Length: 326
Image (cartoon, rainbow, N blue to C red):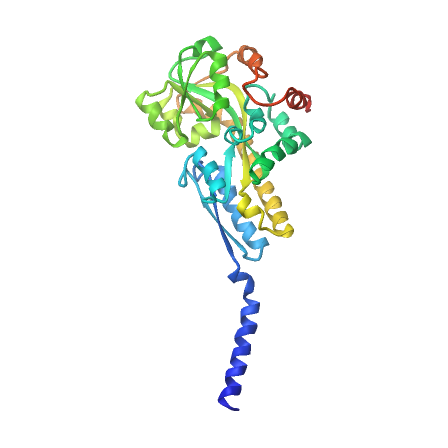
């Protein structure tokens, strides 16, 4: 066999090997950003989803998950999605509402009755219609909602009725819709990034904060607050959003993989958070915290007049459709 023949055979072998190895060379690496701690279900299920997408796509997608505000706070990762510096995010509906106001409707205090109302909304045509408004503006893909829990107030004093919060410096997330709750109770809203809340409470920059019980536990806010007040004023949820620069390039088959896996991850995290929040009031009592069940009817009555005062940005029809869900 001549040298030239051997070279031709080797060249052919390399070409065949390259064709077989083609998908690996076409791997897409993505960044998934969020602000939550590594022990929380949002993060652990994101890790599961990243691994599952890699498996189901035959290794075409490698997703790195960046927790605990590593790639920025809520506003910054939302901006990053538009800039293409991050590819997927979890974000509270109030932050997406800065782009399309109706998507934040469930962050109005007491607009959702309970967990069942949340699940009905997530599965409804209303949610998909509102999400489409956001998608039309951004070209990003809203995949699903994950339950974040009912938001409760913590403080260093007893709170039994709305009037007890008058003049209180309350930390709220830096998104406009959270002002509706503080306005309803006469508190002074103090927007602070999530990663800075513990220090603000410790130093007395604010008098209290509000978050679901699993978050209060995970972020150890109870270490610097003596009272946990079960206001349940907002039934909170997180959107899972894929950036337009990623979604537009996907095949229909890959889009289906992402939608199925991310929805499954959302369901798993939702169930874990729901189970956790039902047990945590007793855990806080064991830690020596004072747990108060306030007059929730009074808090709700204070909030209802603000729902359709025009500040929220949703239509009366959207509001009525949400209230009609069972």
